[in-house]
Length: 188
Length: 188
DNA sequence: ATTTTACGAATGAACGTTCGGTCGCAAAAA
DNA sequence: TTTTTGCGACCGAACGTTCATTCGTAAAAT
Image (cartoon, rainbow over all chains, first blue to last red; front, side):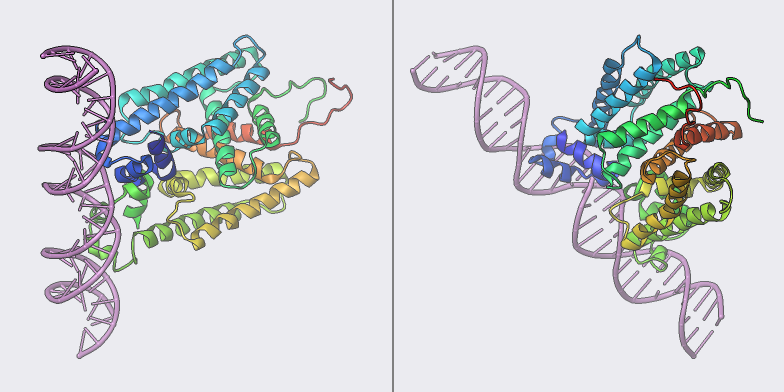
């Protein structure tokens, strides 16, 4: 499974051949079929594992009863840790998002990870601490920014230092937080 | 080439077979080889075309001597228009970014599109209108957010209405603009 | 008449997958 | 203790299919 995860993450589902995966695992191609029914089942199993790992990493590390700003910071740190500790799982998830070969069970996991975050954001919206917008656009914006950061770092555009992570985190928080109310003077 | 662009955008390089492309084009597979040397040359030609189209769309639509806020808005509008008018080219670029099969000529185009934007951001940084950060993290953040928005809309998470586009644009501008200087009272 | 363009058919390679059988090992039988 | 049995993991070899690509030739365009 390690070999499959690595190759799928590197070359995508169609680009990773079963013989290649087997060779990387130090195993005969036929051996794979004594553990998985086929290539599709293998990729689905990997997808579910990676998605669950990501979801668990997020849920367990965000304090439920903290200020929204701290929750966001904790969420960001959890994301960074996951992307650093399991870079292949992260790249795999990114690459196989919504592939035709994913079955219903794999697709259902998408919402299980997304909805808790959406609920937190919806709460922040009612409290007036995040922007008065529906949660989904905000989520995909932040998620897209995070993915962009990780991708760029992986491609060598810059180093994924703690500094850069913190700076981009602050940048994303500025994106979703409610604008400061106009106290006193107004502009046009 | 239309057929190839569509199939590459849908299934990726390895997932799009030459016979499939030929069938979609209403042509025999051998015919493709009287126009392109091979599959790799075909995908590179498509990549270059799409990348140049995107670069042209950006460069021509951003007023050089306007306030940075307006430049950013124009840039965003150009991106939205490109993603709307040529959705397959946009998806294709997104999917084939940094594939092994891309040659040096295709890879070189990456910088040609990126550096003008980086220069604009560098200027804004010196003027104090955007954040005091290196341009690359800001660029990948905004670009990632934009891609996330387009992807989510394509997958049906929400409709890509003018309203949503404008809201996310404002969100991204909040992300990269300089924080308001502390005038008068200071907060710890 | 000559050059370009398209195609049907065929090629070797690589694909995902199957099958029959060998191996090592732990439990059961002697 | 020794032998036998059962079993799951593994593999070499093969299957039919599909892949990217080539070639000789026919049609079309100039």
